[in-house]
Amino acid sequence: LQRLAMSLGISENVRFLNRFVDIQELCEFLGCADVYVTPYRNEAQITSGTLAYAMGSGKPVVSTPYWYATEMLAEGRGVITPFGDAKSLTANVLALLNDPVRRHAIRKRAHLFTRDAVWSKVAQEYFKVFAEAKERGQRQPTQRFRARAILPATAAPLPEINLEHLRRMTDSTGLLQHSKFNIPDRAHGHYTDDNARALVLTVSAQDLLSQDDRLASMSVCYLGFLAHALNPGTARFLNFMSYDRRWEEAEGSEDSQGRALWALGVTVGHAPDKGQVVAATSLFNRALPAAETFSHPRASALALIGINAYLGRFAGDSGARRTARLLARRILRDFRRNATDDWYWLEDILTYDNGKLAQALLVTGACLENARMVEVGIKALEWLTEVQCTAGMFRPVGNDGWYRKDGHRARFDQQPIEAQSMIEAYVAAHAATGETRWADLAEQVFQWFLGHNDLAAPLWDPDTGACHDGLGPEGANLNQGAESTLAWLLSLADMHKLRAVRAGRSRMPLEALGARTMTCEGTP
Picture (cartoon, rainbow, N blue to C red):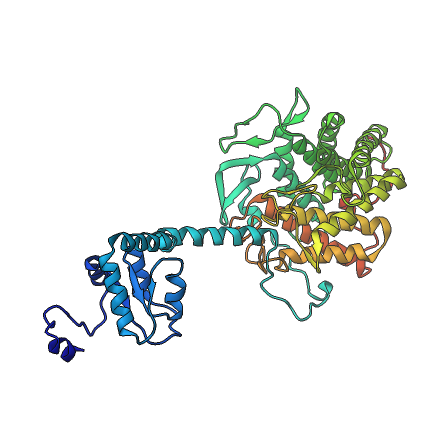
């Protein structure tokens, strides 16, 4: 080529660079060019970086018809010339140089075509694809592994109950609400709901941890918090307390009232300490009348579970029985108004702590000998199972959108509180019916904590006994707050008791859940 240029007398007009050039130098060359030529001989050429840069720079291109050029220069974005035809190549280049209107039209079409390939646009397209993938993954996550065979859940021994993190989260006032990772976060103070859950755990687990002499003092702390939370003027529980021990609201929620009644009822029915029983009985009877004003079914369900546990000690309390009958009938009414064959639920949205509603009907139906309550409780639990247990795995409805009737269910963020509520409901169903399928389902849901979930991510922290704050699309939330930790500990305690029942070591299924009433000891 160099000799040919010399023989033609144009060596001063033609320069050959037999080397690679960097992007900056390439762009300088392209900036100087009027026409860019790619005379490749191989038709199977599938890409050309310089062709892409030339078009992006708004330069008209003359090229042989290799595959990449044919696609890129179609629809008037460049000029194609045959392989090995020097005369055609010359004619096409000269035609462009002599026709500025055509040359600029080709240049403009090429430049506009490559706007989607600039890095800022490419980054936006990547972001769009990732966002679509994330949304699709939240609706239908891909399981990261598929075990060839899963041993029966009962074949694996249960972990021991470890209260280290619960103690870490408890100060002289009560249980702190949140943590940053595994460090208590004092900025959010204390929460009546969590102290109520902690009271349920520390009372009902004392037979499992009889050697732990600190358990009784912990239950006293949580019971004391509930006593302080009860507003003597309204008989309603306050809910949020700042770390400087100031209540942040004039009145708590119905949920906090119901959850406190649940905890107090369990304490009345099962606390081994008579002083705690007396104190809890007084608080329970002062707070119970407010339950009759509840408008939210979850609050009613929580109160019903507490009432049933309370009646385990005071079966002759006609006032408590009347309140139980009133609240349960309201829940039945809501099911009658809203439930259909394909949406057997009392609301048009499925949210949190759903198992408590089925459990409340089951234990109250058993207590009041009401077969209809038990029937609806079983049907509701079967529907919840159909929605949340698929392909042998528990997949709770996520709180990032919940699940609306005729809508899409949120797959994340999955919450431990839902797993715990379902385990308790299954245990109650097992006690009410004697059917082993409910115990098997409780085992299946429990495995969610241990990593048998959509992301194969364990929620349980074996070092401290804590539980991560839910399962998101990227994995487990690394914070370990009170609600999640108590959901794990309550579930673990329930499973220890359930396995004892199945092994014949215990005659009565989980009394702390109020599955059946006990012999009346009198009235308060």
